[in-house]
Image 1: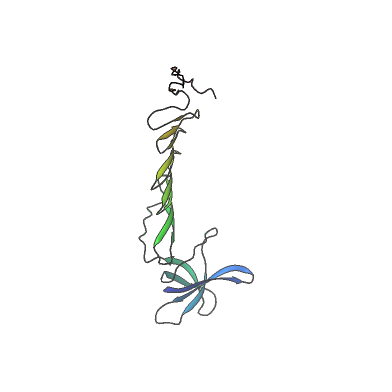
Image 2: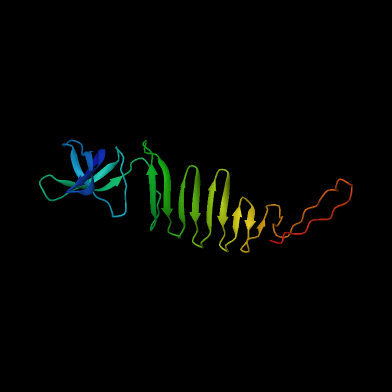
Length: 185
């Protein structure tokens, strides 16, 4: 038998020297329940007060374990076959996410920026002030400055770092100077 309760408190503890966590919850109309928290290995998630917990009966009279949680505040958006993890501020609002989508895209981000890994290996990092793109062919685009596979950079207005020269003004004697040669190294 199980019951759904509202979380009041979540505490990190130890049981026989093993790290554990306890959930204190209000099942409504019954005595408050303190139950041991269980989640998959490799996951470290800390529910917030006012989340809901599923308590399942375990060995012992009246004992329960916390088997799952519900965030009543944020819309769940993962589609079939996807995995989305997000963090929340103390007010319960989502502040960051990592979303592994069913088309092979991996998206990570927060309100300040994002990183997207596309199924073809291309990637984009961006914030409000700029971006860096690693294209599928290995070319890099940094706010319009393109770095080719040969390492040559080309500005957004088409000036190549490898093949351009600079005009020089007349010297102090009024002699006309020639164009400089292209860089050699």
